[in-house]
Length: 106
Image 1 (tube, rainbow, N blue to C red):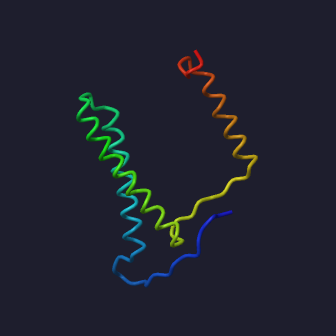
Image 2: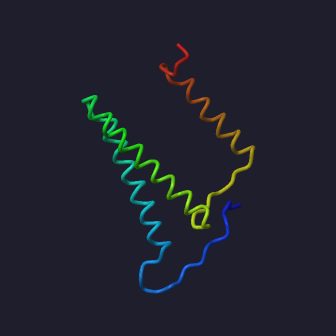
C-alpha cells in the first residue's frame, strides 16, 4: 500500500513541467549530498572537514525540503510496511551488531 497525498496536476507539453524540475532538483541534491558524504569521509585536514561537513549539512537540508514539498504535493510516494515486517528487519539488523567485535559491547 502506498502512502501518498493527492497528486497535484500539472500541464502536459513539450517543456519541462514543474514536476520534472523538482524531480531533477531532488535527484541532483541526492547526488551532491552523496558526493559530499564521500569527501567528508576522506578529507584529512580538520578545518577542511568542518567546511565540507557544513556544506554537506546544507545540501542534506535542501534535499529534505525538496522531498517534503514533493511529498506534500503528491509527487513522491513511499511504501508502507506491516509492523511484523518492521520487527523482522529490526531483529535481523540487531543480530548484525553482535557479529562485529567493535560494536560498543566490549
